Image 1 (cartoon, rainbow, N blue to C red):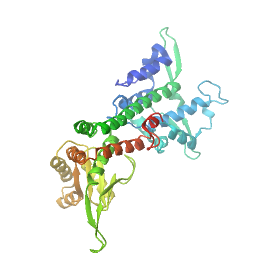
Image 2 (tube, rainbow, N blue to C red):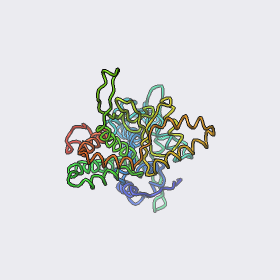
Image 3 (cartoon, helix red, strand yellow):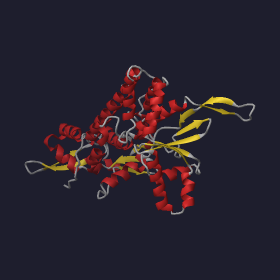
Image 4 (cartoon, helix red, strand yellow):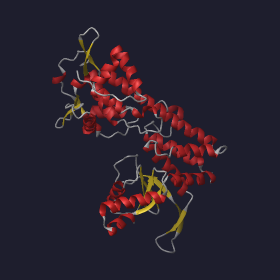
Length: 392
């Protein structure tokens, strides 16, 4: 009965509470005996950090749907007609459909079911040679690794007892999702209230937005807020453009969000019309990441929106220093640096937001944050009233 080290964090007591409801005084032993539970514990650190921590659900839900299928087919209660080893497996289409029915994941992709969960689990538990999900690529059928659902615990009387943790897995993930859902709902409600109070107390509105632009916030929240601020900022500006000098007209600058955050979109998060500027949001001052994005668009100039409180010069110097250390050749370094059209840091975003408030566009920014957040976190119809999508 091997035991695994479990690092406790803010959500761990909730996990232990669920396990206690299932296994009584042996909750801690079950947690330490099951690598699947240890993995879930590691993946739920963000639960109690409100909107200031990344909330990702793909791997949780990949595990959730195969365990749920295991239970529904009667293997937990022993009512199935065959042993699990002879089960034909769940169809990918059914599991994928079920994943997309769960909160936050209406637009979920298939990566977690098709290997990402197993790959990450292996990083946490390299000595456990059984992947959580077993799949047959040819038939597109899926199973949960049944051995990982069982824990043998020594009782106080010296005997051994086997427990099945499948129902506990479902309950823990449900509790995690409920916690994150409440946090994001509170974040969006705060957006509403700040928008209503902003005209009377612009400093409070500014402080709220500044808090969403700090280095420790959820990457998706940072991208959404920075987009809303920059869209309003550029929306006040115009350019003169035309095919000929006789057809030149004044046009407003419009910033478009190209897709969901963290999407595989070639490194382009926002696009501006009519200038054709590209924007990429990034969490770090990592030269390799910047130059990879530049190469994806054949060194077309990119504006980088950086989640950093460092000055613009510090960020630029750090990128250049890393580039020089890697490439050595100045002409190569310069060819990349010339493709960095502009760097927008946290200070620049805050300054832009203060200007937006002064121009009377606070409501526009807050409405955009709410709209994009509802889309990003799958809170149902983006145009639905708050009281409807909170419970979606």
